[in-house]
Length: 329
Image (cartoon, rainbow, N blue to C red; front, side, top):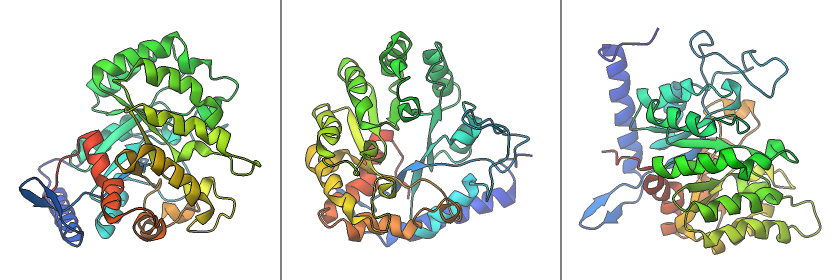
C-alpha cells in the first residue's frame, strides 16, 4: 500500500534525503550563475528502476520467454536509488524505463510523481505500434513523463518503423509536447534517425552508449562518423555511458574507449555531452557494472581531456538545462 503524503515516517525520510543531498552538494565546487553562486547539480541521465511490488506494478518483459517473471536479484527501487544518490552526492536522475516492465510505464511515472524534484522519467512504447503518437501523448500529458526511449538496436533488419508514417506522426506530436527521445541505436541505423532529426528540429534527441560503435572491426571510424555527423544538428546530445559495453579490454576505466569519447567531445562539445550509469545500489554488482564512485571518477579523474568546467557541465549542468530539473537548496 502506498504511504500517505501525511505519513510522518515518509515525511521524515524525505527530510533526511533532502538534507543528505544538501550536505553532499556542499562538497562540490561552487558554480557562478550571474550574480548567484550555487552548487552544481550531479545528474545521472541513464538510470533504470523497477518495482519490488509485482502485484501493484506487474512485470511484462516483451523480450523474455517468461515475460511476467520477477527479475532475479535485488529490486532496483526508487528508494534504493535515492539512498545511493544521497550517499554519493547525486542530486537527480533521469529514470529510463527498464524492459522488465515492458510498455507499462506506471512504475517510472510513480517514481516521478513521488519524488518530483529528484526524478524525470522516460518511458517505453512498442515502436511498431501504429498508435505510437497517441501513446506518447498519454504518458506525457497524463502521467508526467518527459519523453521516451526507443531501442532500434533490437530491431536490426526490421527497423523501417524508424522513419515510417507512424513515427512521422510521433515526431510531430513530440514537437508539440516538447518531448525528449533517447535512442539505444547501432551506428548503421543512424542515417534513418538523421532523417527524422533534420525534419523535426523541435524534438530533442539523446544518443545512448556511444551508439555502440564496434571497436572490433579494423577501422571503426567510418561507422562512428555517422554519429559524429549528427553534431551539426543542435537538437542532438550524446551520453558518455556504458563504456564497458564497447571496450575491448573490459577493464575499468576502459581506456581503449577514450579516443572515441574524445571524438564525441570534439564534435559535440562539452555542452552536449551527458553522464549516465544504469543500475542502482547493489544491482550494479549484480549486473557486472562499475560502482557509482567509479562512474563518477571516470568523468572527474580518468578522462583527462575533460576540464573542470567540462566536468561540471557533463555531470549535471547540461542535463539540468535539457530536462528542466529544479535547483535543489
